[in-house]
Structures are given as C-alpha cells and as structure tokens.
Amino acid sequence: MGARRFRRLAISAAAALAVTLRPFSSGAADTAPRVKDLLARAAEYVQQFQRQFGAVISLETYEQHDEQRREAMPRAWLSVSSEARTLRSEMLFTWLPTERSWLAVRNVLAVDGESVADSADRLDRALSETGSRRLLRLLADEGARFNLGRIRRNVNDPTLVLRFLDAASQSRFKFSLAGREQVKGVDSWMLTFRERETPALVRNARGDDLFASGSIWLAVADSAVVRTSLALNDKRARLEATTLVDYQRELKLAMWVPSQMVESYVQQVGKVEERITCTATYSDYRRFETSGRLLSQ
Image (cartoon, rainbow, N blue to C red):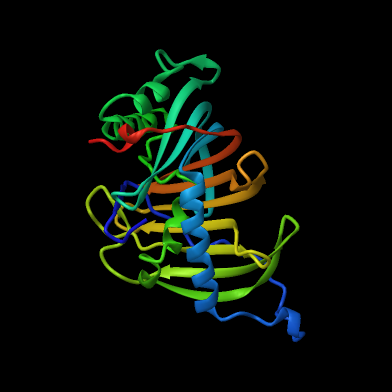
C-alpha cells in the first residue's frame, strides 16, 4: 500500500458514483466527525485488515459483457457486436510486507463452463514453491488474457481502493466528508477522494499518471470499509473506467470482505465505442496457511 508502489494499467475511468445522501443531523449523537479523525481510524482499520486478511483465497464468478456500437447518424448508435463471457476463478489476496503492497491473483479455473488446462492446483503449487512471489506475479498477469474485449486492463482488484487509506498514502489525496448514508443497512460516513500528487499510484502502460478519484463508505460504528468506488480517466486513449465494490461481514474470517465488484470500461476508437461491463461475486473465503517461501524472490 505504500506510495512507492505503482500499478501499471492500460485503462482509465469516469466520474465518481453519484449517490443520494442524508444530510447531517444536528443531534449530538449524529455530529459529523472531522475528516482527519475519520482518516486516522480508517488507517488503523486498514492496518488491521492487512494483518487479518494475510493470505486469503475466495471463489470468484466473473460475468463480462462486451458491446461495440458504431455511430450511424447524429445522436443515434447502431450495435455492431455483443459478446458475453463467464469466468470461474480462485482469487488470492496476499499482503507483501517487504513491499508494503497487496498482490491480487486471479487463477482462472473455467471459461464459459470449459475447464482451463492445468488450473486446478496451479495456485497451491505457486504458493508452496520456492520463488513463489515471482510465480504469483506471472500468474496474475496470465489471468488477464481471459478478459473479454480489446480493452487491456488489470485494475480489476476489489481491494485496490483500500490502499489509498494506508497511512503512507493518505497525504497523496484530498479527502472530503460528503455525508451520511445507509449502505445495505449499515450506517456509514461517505468520504470522497481525489489524488493530487505525482507520480500517481495508478499509471497506464505508457507511464502516464491516471489520477484516482471516487468515494469510500466507512461504518459509523467501527470505521469498517463497507463500499468503495473508483474512477480513472485516460484522456489520450479516450478510455474511461469505474469500479464499485461492496463488502460484507464474513463470519468464518470474522472480518469484512469484498462480496461484489461491478465495473464499467468505455473506449472510443474513431466512430466505434466499446463498452465492457463486468460483475464479480465472491464466496467461500478461506485462509491459506503460508510459509516464509511466499515472500521469496
């Protein structure tokens, strides 16, 4: 999560998610907290999340839809193609303390119901072998080849925005308190953020800064992250992306974990617009018992 770690992408994103907020109450129990106090509690929460999440594996069902439209006449569009794909994967989340960063690895097990060769125990092998960190990074890059459409992307990590709340990264952003809202029955403070320092934590394949913006919802009771939204914008590539992640309480792990991620990627190439929408759902979380080899080179 440190400011020294950069993520290289070939994508960008649009404006932050619009929501309807409940105005602050004047009652003493509902007094709005100071932003710096919220951020301090959020940093403590993220630090605890790093320790608890450690190395966790979940099952992911990832539905992708790719629609291309061509401009037929002013203010009218003609659909030229539409495709769909469903990936079933193991999703590994692990914290690398020597790099102060997360590593999210998607091991694709099946595509549209067809098993991927040699995938069943690939993640376990990578975690148990010497040099596992290098093997896991290779596996993470390989997983992107199953993505539908021509838009190259590797930002589809549901925990990415948590890194912005790390104490080492917070100063890079302008945070504002936007209001108070119920998120699936959880009373939450909504923080908006906008990255303001270069180099950006997210960069495209050309090395251009993609300054992040979006929102984070923190539970009033304990500052748990219950929802995040992320927006990026690559103007040179005419490419936009947004990501919305919901969290839920996982009893087996005794912590909040990602439950659903909804993404949108839009790129304009000439008169053709490609729009990719994705929904990922997460289940069957379990901890992986690691050894020191996980952090080996």
